Length: 203
Ligand code: ADP
Ligand code: ADP
Image 1 (cartoon, helix red, strand yellow):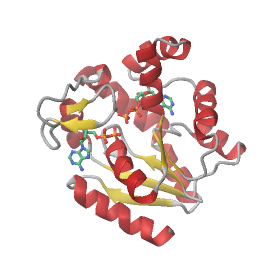
Image 2 (cartoon, rainbow, N blue to C red):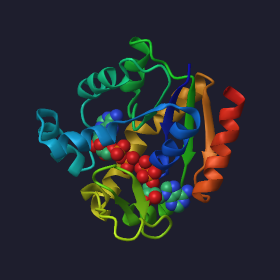
Image 3 (cartoon, protein in one colour):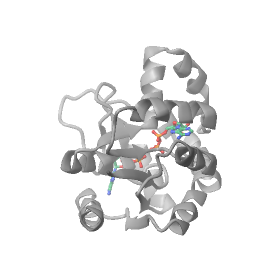
Image 4 (spheres, rainbow, N blue to C red):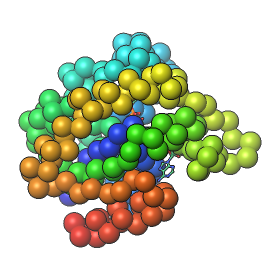
């Protein structure tokens, strides 16, 4: 059984590394950001509730999020959570439903790198695959969009929310002895190598 939680500031490379991990280790990739954006795109009730919150860089409330996770993990034994938990309450809720992770991968990345990366992030709205106009360009001719919340004024708020509400999870998982830290300020390939080395030890 493999249950991984990805931690790290917005733009640290969680989604990018998750894409490699799911292929190499046959895990289900559960990205709460992707689930919420998909709901916004389809205009569901949840999407309508979440749109303004995401647009302002704040967090969707914990009750809604744990409901989303319960639904998303149904029938899945091995998974990687990307973007969840984002608060101590969400981490505690995960324990309550007997889905404690056995590894928390923390991708560390300084603010200046993050601001540059997020300004260059582009997403394929259909596959949700992410690219970067500076470091990881999309294939020629592919239609990609910039996320509303990747605009500079919202990014500042997201970083503040991360520091206040999400960063305490680093200590939370450290105390449980399952935190492994990776330097996110390297090429995508080198971060993946470090992640792989950690995976070899737990596999
Ligand atoms: P990033 O990977 O860039 O940090 P995500 O795609 O994970 O961003 O999330 C985008 C937005 O979706 C967040 O800023 C937040 O508003 C909302 N969101 C995603 N996951 C959660 C969560 N677990 N709890 C609350 N809000 C969430
Ligand atoms: P997160 O899911 O943590 O918000 P992403 O995986 O979406 O982060 O990455 C944010 C942006 O930075 C994307 O445009 C991605 O292509 C790019 N990126 C990811 N990892 C790296 C890296 N190691 N070096 C340079 N750019 C990266």
